[in-house]
Image: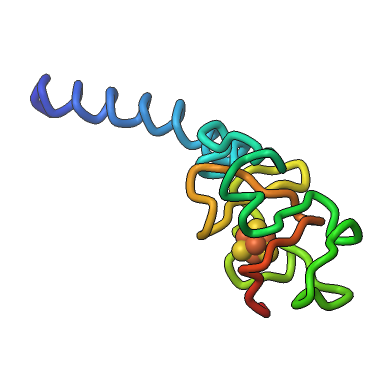
Length: 104
Ligand code: SF4
């Protein structure tokens, strides 16, 4: 086997063995998502709360949480927090709720 081809195989194999274990233990995008604060201006405008039980909003129905909202990405942040299509770049709490809730 030519030297260049063997070197490419070695480097490719070394990269794959370094990257694949990291992908297995880290949810996609987990490091990029900052937890949303209830004091965030958009969170306030959409009546977001970390705990759905604290919500006092006319459209809220018992049992609705971010975890069962169609806009929630459960695997995006870990530890009970996930991504949300409305609050891009932020993590919302799985037990939370906002007025943009969409039945999942
Ligand atoms: S849109 Fe859904 S997932 Fe996002 S904050 Fe509102 S209820 Fe939670």
